[in-house]
Image 1 (cartoon, rainbow, N blue to C red):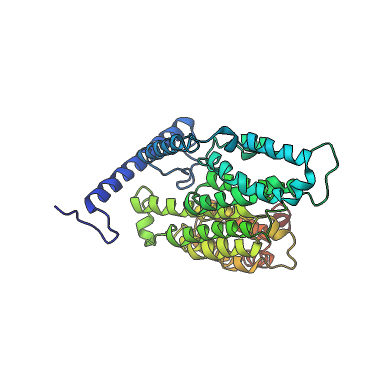
Image 2 (spheres, helix red, strand yellow):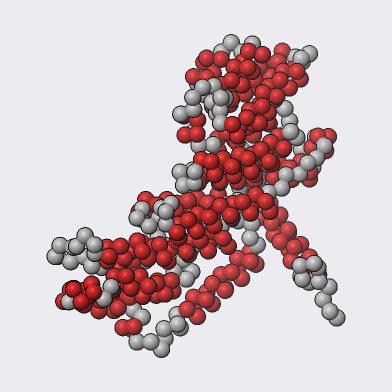
Length: 411
């Protein structure tokens, strides 16, 4: 029988079976994590959607590792019929070092310094075949044999010339080998939802920026391609992977229901993504980051979820976690009483939240009124923390918050 294919050309029966298995394994992982939190007493502090970085099934991980091992074994055969002096970086390097040492002018006239990065390129790429900074046990490329072998190439006792291109051997290899490798990883492997992977990508990027400023800079073509790949991956995540469900509030009243749990998971996973985007502060411009994180994620998805959240402790807790993601440097040098323009909608929501909490407290008990007042004070502090002093003063004035100055100073 011919297989029953869907619009993507997949066998429907096999695809559905695979999807069911993935769902079952995902739920099993969540159950194990939940039980572990219960045993350690961390259940109360846990927020669904923040914990799991790895959503791959054990089957996928096993298949990946098997394929990786197969590729590693196959790669060891690439030079099996080649003499060591023609594929060993140490042997090749020693020959050119001898030429440079004995006949420097001939070496220089042959432009060997310009040829060496191209010569070593395929040999280094072979050693980096399974290298990825996304893995916990990833080896620092500066500790690899090829790097240590080439580290002091061209460093001799005699004084070096100012235009000696061999000085730039390793930076050029970083530009021609490491950056293209990272570009492919950013496009095809990096998951922006993963806090761990994002931290590692940010770490390796900062390492290259600080360690190799001559090639890893805004004017370098390969650097531009790499940064563009990162941005496109983040934009693709916004467009394809972020989803915020809309439910009537009465559907979310049952906190053990499927819709409520799914809504909370989607909200907190979006907040996690917001924090991951803003880990790139200092690498991308503020304009680019604010466009991605505030316009693309906060205003487009997270604010929509706030409309379905409870007015009170829950909403304030969520707002606090959102604000914790913002770089403090955004607000330090702001002049006047207004925050950055992209946060205006978020600030208006906080003002609306304060008004709603106050209205809901009318006619309630004294304890509930005191809680409402404390919540309003907390909102004033949140607004002040993002330098939205105009909104903070408005809320303090409307609700007779006399401790405005101390709240601002203690933010």
